[in-house]
Image 1 (cartoon, rainbow, N blue to C red):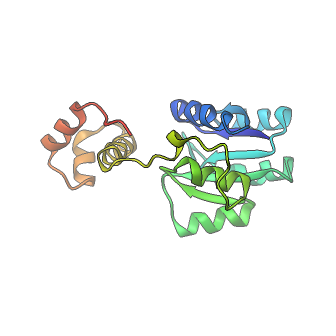
Image 2 (cartoon, rainbow, N blue to C red):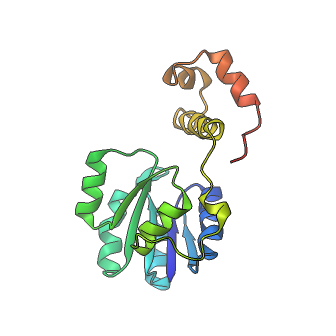
Length: 176
């Protein structure tokens, strides 16, 4: 199974590639639209994991060209900005599945392989759920990134006092 991971967050892309390699996927990474099309032509993946927000691009716009290039590929759209409208649009454009971040490895594997049964190769570390503290940290980081590092705007969006947010940001991220 050949997997193309199209994700602009390099750390997340590398983590996904490492974990999915353990489950039998040969992984290639792309971080933007042009790179994704080029790798798709040369690598001919059987599976594609596509992030919806690619820096300034929209992953939805990539579904149709990828589907035209690779008619039999299994495309899974992964997003941190889920909505019913984008889910419907993704399916209409040709995606096979639509998942929201953060996603656990079991759900991701089920979406990629199209099976409802867990694979026997599942590693216990992959199916550990996130603690509430880690989930809060991830959410704060996502909102901070969306606000381009603006602490005041992030605090307002999270309905939190600015100093409280600063204290939370000074702490090291809680391990999963």
